[in-house]
Amino acid sequence: MRDSFFQPCTVANLQLPTRFVMSAMQDRRPEDLLPSTELAQHYADRIAGGIGLIVTQGTTMDHPTSVSPYARLYPPAYDAWRRCAETVRERGGQIAMQLWHESAMRPGGFSPSGLAFSGATTGEALSTTQIEELIEVYAASAARAKALGFSGVELHGGHGYLLGLFASGTSNKRTDEWGGDTVEARMRFPLAVTRAVRKAVGPDFPILYRISQPSPVTAPKIFRNPGELATNAGALVAAGVDMLDVLAPRFWEPEFEGEDLGLNAWLKRCTGAPVISGGSIGLSHDLMSVLTGGKAFSTAHEGFAELERRFDRGDFDLIALGRPILVDPEFLVKIRAGRFDALKQTYEKDDISSEARTARLAKARQAAPASG
Ligand SMILES: Cc1cc2nc3c(=O)[nH]c(=O)nc-3n(C[C@H](O)[C@H](O)[C@H](O)COP(=O)(O)O)c2cc1C
Image (cartoon, rainbow, N blue to C red):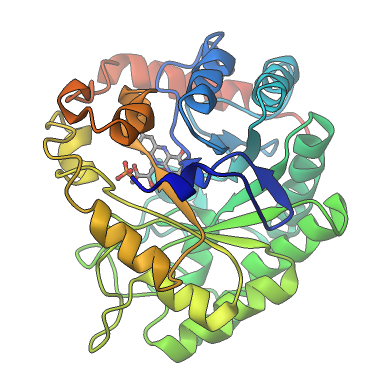
């Protein structure tokens, strides 16, 4: 991989030691819904291995409708998160906290209209009061991340979580001010959240926004053409987003017919904002096959030339790695030295039984915050 990627740079107000980002990835064994005791060291090892910016796993916010079996961002989790931020920054890296609301991802979850991305009924529709509360909860969570020493926040607007569900016409059937026939109308909630977060963290604190289109088998595209993408991504940037983090299975796949441009390139061209791009860099197996126990990668060096070509073309600013860096903190060190044979090859599939997961979810429901 090209040496210049390993040089310091400043992007979206973040001074970074390299251009590599560790994508948000759940710690799959959280202890009591807290970040695990090893998490700070896990992140430190990735910084030592060449990552410049870490995006934490999605963290659960402090509202009764926001329930997940993963780590929370409310007491007693603050000390553990502060330790993660301090550890990463002491080692010269940056760390952004990802805020998510799992919404219809869980049976019984709260979503815009009680529907999942596919349109299937899975839970309850949020009331307008809950929607207004959630805007404030996002803002308070971002301010909390700043107070805990994080370098920025990332709003998870990607596939199937709350912000994305509002944006999609398949899952948002609301007829009030939070829904409508156009994507512009359905984006009112993500935009209100972004504006509230910006107000809460002040003008200089970086806000990242994770953005994706549904996979073709799940639901129709949210942004159906370059015009819709430009209008709505532009509105996010105008509302306070500093950097767009593209969630895509493969960084090279064209987004709209007729042009060799991925979602990364379209976003960069239509907003001018910095873009993080990842998805199967150094991998030959897609995410779902790996999560169900497939092999993580076999030919890591393939595709790097394509990555460099697209970077040189100006398609994106930062390069995100997920699974390779999860299994091998030295992935970049080995790649840089051309030691492809030394790369770790497999991703351990989640070893938590479904009973354990159900028990954890029940516990999360019980622990769901008192406030909100
Ligand atoms: C175990 C695991 C957990 C993940 N958790 C999150 C998450 O919390 N938030 C998020 O935005 N993406 C999450 N992702 C998606 C990754 O951030 C990344 O976009 C995806 O793995 C594709 O990148 P890759 O091909 O380099 O692995 C997760 C992926 C994995 C493998």
